[in-house]
Image 1: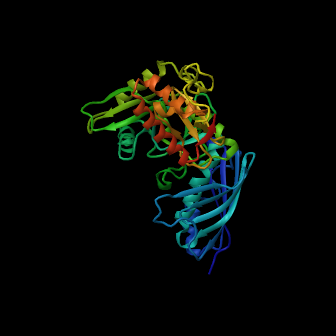
Image 2: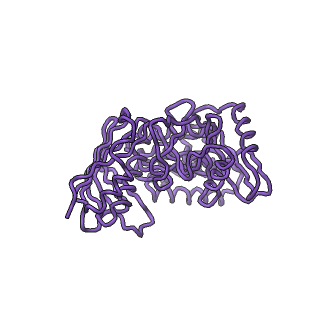
Image 3: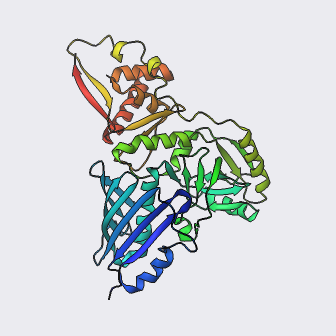
Length: 415
């Protein structure tokens, strides 16, 4: 026996966000848990204004749909056109159509995994919808003190959640354990709690309007004493913490713009001891952030190209014979990119990850504008003062890797 259609929603009042979800064909036994998890109406509050309109309809299926529960990849998003995409998550699959300020979708979910499937759909579609508004999700804990927030970044197991909980016990307000949204369309950027963070234990109500983000700390646990120093690679530190899905082809540059604004926030390394009070030291560190100057929001698109080109027209080596075949390297036109603090940051509509390149890779990427492979090798030799054989091996490896990802291409040319 099945129930009537179930109307659920995920609200983020502080971002004027509402995702409305209609489920059809679910067993009655599933309804109560889902309605408690995603109530259709917020308690004691009117519906928020909608900055993004999301309407999804899913029908339960008796057959397994979506990605299996054992899959290491939990979400796949493939763009069929500029406006249409197919989304697959653990236990659900649906077709999406995106428009200006709206997303509509229809598909199926695995009735035997309905709760997990609904959670996965809500997380994935929320991530996509917020990205379109320059709101990025971070794999980060966050705390607030005196009306300002900081995010605690780090790899899994680094101690982000433990540090946030310790600071919470010492009087700071704990905003999140593992995931937070940062609105980069605002100045300063604002942090917002998410309804699906902490497995649904983080309730978001209409009174929560977010807090200004003062900066971030990359957490390293196991120190002998609390300490803080500037992060040596802030662009990569921020980018590695972004939870993203492949953007629509026309929106990749908007995501890059958001990343550029994210990197303008100061990022430090916070060395955390296993015991002892933390809050007084963290407060002093935050006071220092208030006094520090912010860096410019946008870096140059090209920083080394003119110098690395060596003054040769097109970068072609003068020793090439008239009939010798050369390989020229070109960037694929579907890749949106920007150089931030000397680091190449790439967004590809076919990839869920925002890519960052090392120093050599960033230089090669900038020079991959149709000039020859030999000219690029020469530029690497000059810039990094390495032997030609080593430079050629590094450039060949880098070009081959990105060629395999469809981000670079070699074009033979006979002179």
